Image (cartoon, rainbow, N blue to C red; front, side, top):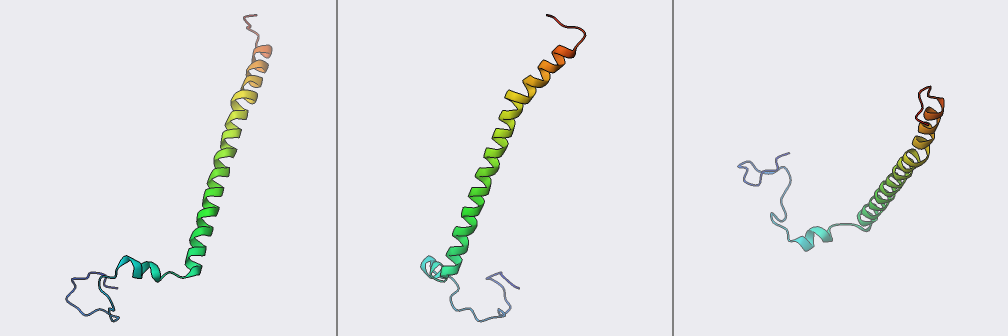
Length: 83
């Protein structure tokens, strides 16, 4: 498909308006197009938010519960102890 507007060959399909205004382009959208846009955006934002929250809580759990527990077990089981 030739998309160059300065092409010397004739376009494959008739050109109705070479430079349409913004209102005509937006007016060409259907209700289904807007519904798809809103749905995909909503799902993407929700999934991204939940992914961030889950990774935050996993890192929080690791640094404040699992890591101190492992260090405590290592200190207790270590033959060389400062205390």
